[in-house]
Amino acid sequence: MIKKFTGYALGMSLAAILLSFSCNNRDAGLIKVEKINVTYTESGEDFPNPERGFYRYSEVHSSNYTVLNADELKGYRSPQSIESANYQVSSTLVFRYYVLDDVVNTAISATFLTNIKKDFEAARAAGVKLIPRFVYTTTAKQGNCPEGFICPLYGDAPKAIILNHIAQLKPILHDNADVIACVQLGFIGVWGEQYYSDFFGDASNNGNQDHKLTDNNWKDRIEVIKAMLDAVPADRMIQVRYPQLKQRYIYGVNAPLTSAPLTESGAFNETDIARLGYHNDCFMASSNDFGTYEDYGNSSTPRTSDGTVLNTLKDYFKADSKFVVVGGETCSDDYSPSNDCEPAGKAQAEFSSLHYSFINAHYNTAVNNDWQDGGCMDNIKRNLGYRFVLQSAALPDNTIKGTVMNISLNLKNVGYASPYNKRTVKLILRNTKSGEVKSFDLATDVRKWYSGDVKVTEGVKIPDDFPAGDYEMLLSLPDAYASIATKPEFSIRLANNDVWEAATGYNKLNHTVKVN
View 1 (cartoon, rainbow, N blue to C red):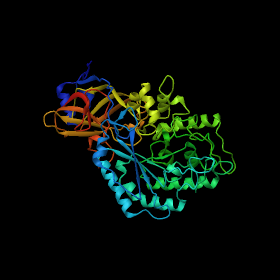
View 2: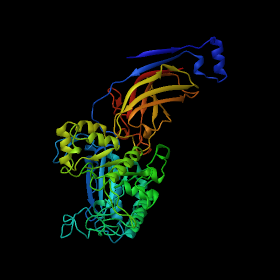
View 3: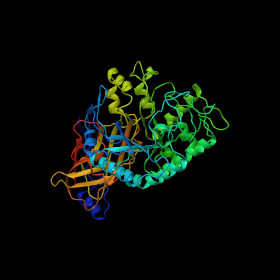
View 4: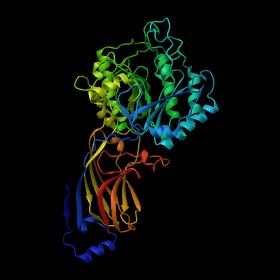
């Protein structure tokens, strides 16, 4: 339905209006103004959008490097079957394990660094982004130890080696930030999950009698986080494995579980607290996600993992995660039936309350298959991260050069999270005859388009020398980096029928404005 609203200049003759223009007093209230209310239809289609959704898994070893293939990565953007899975996914994210297996006691080779650059080049060409994690081992060595399936020595590296490696990686991470979605902390422990470690405290049953971390363990971990925050560009976030790790980085080794989470006033400003997100690699695998929500103690306090600890840390995570990047993977289908679809489980509710943007398409498929069988997989595929539905817009039917043109957009984010990386929202005016495009940056911050209703009301100044004519109105949400800003694959698509232009990456507002 389209409804027209009309307002009229009051008590003004044509001569007076023309005089007001000649004096550069271009007040839209002095002329006839018409606004159109345009409504839009929501799409149920599952389509790729940047920096969200099911990611594809990739692993490479420094001892035997195979560079990513751009054609293969590009194929991920279309629906593909996953090995041992009963579902298909389209992906714009590629998780990349960089296993530094042959440099545990030496510097990273120049060849390895060159190959990483080639990986980023492939991602850029393919229209996807990487989630890198640098580690030393992904191998669980079985043996005669309390844990059994994994025993020390684990094979990670000492702090001095890690810090040197981070320094080597810094230039590459800065040069390729455009195709980095976020970076996972990595480095410490098997799989880079900061748990089974030879040098930073072993929090497992294989460790000390108290199974806790000491003050020095925390300080060493904090030093690695600090180095990573410096090595990764300030406009990119770092994911840590456990919420307590963020608390103790921000507030110190004695930080209580009740430490304050991030709030909107401190978010998205490139400070440390605003840049630390989470990767939970045991999403809903047990009551506390296999140690995700535990108090690991310190030199003066014990390790604890009761219900109070669980609830306190999860509440912290829920509040903090609204403003930072969250992702990970499932890891077990044996201990937690709650990771099934509703109503028997609560998988979708958990994704929503913890603001998940992405999850592993490959692991654990036993869990993910249950979502397909249970009927919620389609919802999860659509709603991981953001999903913006344009509901209606109040748009001008005409406007005058030299005046402010006001627009109002009503959207709904039906996804679990808002975007975590900055990007500019642009109003596009495209001449219906010449095809010439004019772009206006809006002030709204897409990272604050949280789940739920979103209203954007803004005015854009039409320049005095703007060519008169009829202009299509479109909305563009391109990447912030100039290197990929014009690539449609990196622009956000609205979840509406008949709005997306695949060739340009623009979203049509299905309305034309006349500029006089």
